[in-house]
Image (cartoon, rainbow, N blue to C red; front, side, top):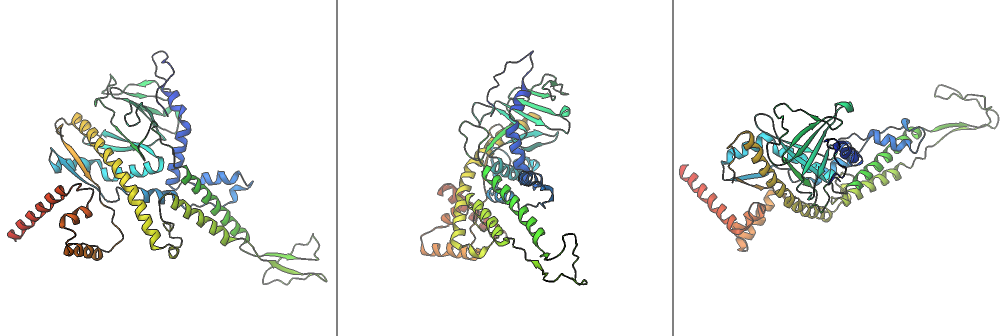
Length: 436
């Protein structure tokens, strides 16, 4: 957390470095989560094994990445591109702005980062021809705030291989400073007065849940801990298989100095009363696999997913359990829609300022944008779904308005809106019929 720097300024210099250094533990945790998501888990697993075994380097390490699977499954809001409707400006012009941003891809990444890290930022920039959109995560960001949703200062760390080459972008609503690794101000060509030309912070805070008084939300550690346990268990299992996949030769009555060479082309000569054989391996492979499977299932269930999300044993998963998963995901999705509709609206307001600063008059000041998220369909065939609609229409318990609102509840919040859209489509169909 970074709210107010309490240290006084010394010699006119901002103590930015002490602020950045004070959040190193939080940033290291964010780095770790990002590595786990990106399949870079081997080094962490080896370190965990070395704490328990003196020959940790002899273990074969591989990962079953449940972090990425669960995060991507939960972050389903941008699975299909949403529809954005612009009021007060040309629809195609508005779509062009978002297309240049590659907004749907960037926002899909942003939601996944938020599910993984719990908090993040969107940064709106300008590349000389059009606006840009980047996701800024907690491993490189520090935020000053009284209200988490309205920061007053944001510092971005630009890491380099050498610490001396690391720089910082220091933003407030009125200023922008580039700083070196010691916090000293670096002159920026074209901006000698260190002015923020936008008059606002060109960032949009993102949260996994509505924040109270903390910007960097807690939580999500259980998923990383489960991933670590699975990685160590699979490394131990494979190590046991390698060591005990073949029987161990043994013999009695031999002189300890004798070296027994075995093989199908060798005759084994033993002293009187001597015995020879192979000890069968006794690795509890099935028990270890069952333990790993149990951990994966419980982790999935804890995060609101079906136990068969990893295809471990689909036969054991009932249709009722799958229905429960759909309900849980649908409920979580409704929460996400409420949050991300707000973030989309804030992003639009920041976009207007950035675009009009560099290309004045591009977006009318009173232009508004409404986002309509694609619906998450149940696993019902198209024929069954349409048959259900037709039966309800034939029975008179539904009208076409109900069908449209069921198909797109996010797009039509009132029956009047749905009715107007149906009339528009009917008029459009009649015009096409006359033309044909």
